[in-house]
Image 1 (cartoon, rainbow, N blue to C red):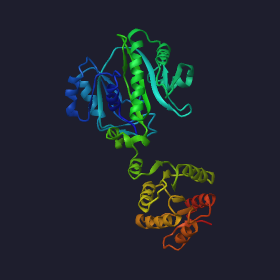
Image 2: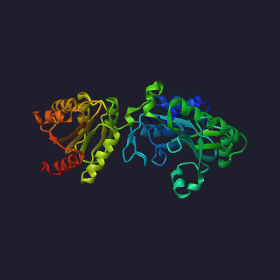
Image 3: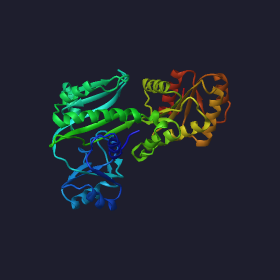
Length: 391
């Protein structure tokens, strides 16, 4: 789950990580009070969407007057913004962050990520922060450094000093880095965060560190114990189908093909999509219905798949382990009737009571194509998507 910048900065403040003075607004009637509260000679108006690279896309504007702030805010609020990180999709702007401007001496990059190779939290840093950090990583990777934190002992003072030297910090900023890095690390541990990013972490002209931007990604698997963070979720920033899937305990990702996939188990779902492509087809989605594939969940899965008008056929690939194949077959038949499917459905069942499950499907009064094995299922669903019939 992602957070907006203003939400991330609120968490930063709770962990003593310095941020600019700012105020979030979600309506023009709040702008005047926000500008007064954020006392500054100039202001920065920031569109709040779940994506980076907003500045290059016109989502971050420096304004010199209240009149200019009003003009910019009116254009942003209620509009949409696409950046290089949104894969061509424009995200709605429902809120803005009004911030003070600061005199910048230097721009740095600092993030904390879960490193699944070393199984540690890892700080990633660079003295060349700012909007072009991706270009820095690609063209001059030697300017990017990393520091692994041993979970048994935590962040050590010598590691912070190494980072401070690598960033070229001196005086007050050198000392403040301990507070910033300790705060980020504790925040990540307390809130089950998979990514914390500050770009840029600025050094002001009076040599203080300030997190000018803030990005937080939370481990969705840990949300059951982060009820306060769940309240910060903004579903308008998510794919509507993916958000609906999450509400129904389904794992769904929309793709660009024309063959719908319904599978139980992420690994089996990946293998299913690979075989579809191997046979010349294109999956329309990734969809894992989980181990307990109830009729209700299967029906919701069909509805999600059919929300794409491009889908020409559907492959249901279920391994009956936790739930028996005969119960799965009955659930599929019930769901097909409920949804009113008019496109071909290929079903491959394997596992407990598989023969009984196949018999139930064969004797049903709905049009379902059964398959013997995953390879056979992939061939049939690709063929029926292209021709409308199977050989």
